[in-house]
Image (cartoon, rainbow, N blue to C red; front, side, top):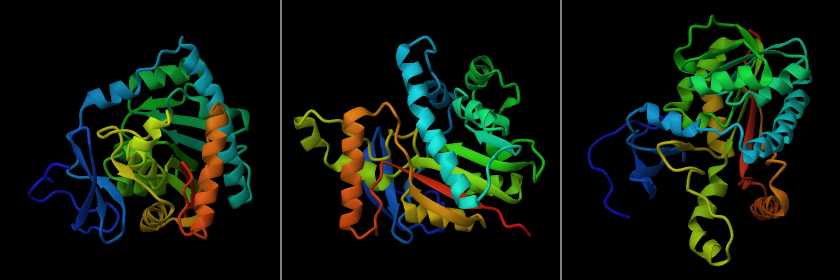
Length: 294
């Protein structure tokens, strides 16, 4: 590694500490672990640019791989919904649902099939247009979630599939989710597990020699990904936002992951077992939480 940046920068988004240990450098950005709470985060935060969002949402709808990706994601969304129903004891039928970062709208389409009243929000006009075009859902708007003009207590369910690690402040994002939920409302978030991506990143030289896929430390390079979560740090952030944490657990991987995906899942289950469950090495994790009914 080259020398770390000098001077002060943003405090830890979870605990507010300013004592960091560098763990990786990728794409010209430094990735740190907070020595107090272990949250993985990019510091200093990069400047916000429209190009990051445009690059992320450059999707060719006519590309066969896009259709395969949409198909493969269905099992991920359905698994998450079933886990939410299990932990809350209630189906989403008839509930007002907001999907933040709705992308191509597949989850909103599934939520509508399940009887929910779907609403979507995304940063880019391309994503909004995709949802309206592909899913025939018009209740989709463009804007920043943290500053969106939506009254408090507007939704029964708020979801963020692969969103939280892109935000500049996960704690602010979660505080807004709490504000927009009705008392007793449910939050569902899914994200890469940095316990997995960091381990794979460190093994990259060996994996390349074996012609196996590797990973970036945060699943994708900064500035696209800015945070890395484990089950413990995600739990901490949810509690900081005043949520009652119902579950933080392994999420489902894409249905088109094939043999390698199955092999990866088996390996991570074994690695987790070897730590007696103290560290979850699943590639992706799911958080389900509830706003107080008071």
